[in-house]
Length: 129
Ligand SMILES: [Zn+2]
Image (cartoon, rainbow, N blue to C red; front, side):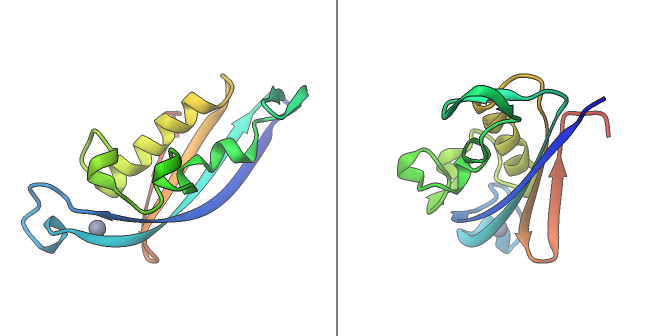
């Protein structure tokens, strides 16, 4: 089966604390989060910027979270104000996955990886791994 796999990476800066955490992560602090998104599709689609079906999706649509929180992204936000769930790396990855899915055509499977530090990261997908 023909398969296209897009990969993109971006970073954003944000503050957060983990509510109920018994330790220093329970206090407000910041991270430069790194995000990798893998988008896999067996067909190509048009996009907001290209009428012909020649893209999996637009890279811009995968990178929405990198934009300023005043413009709908997560950069320079307080994640506790943006996410309806706890702000663990696991939940941030799940949230970015869900919000990215809303912005791209159907039939694209995503794997979202979020690095909280250079040496600690989590992957999230709703595909069978
Ligand atoms: Zn933290």
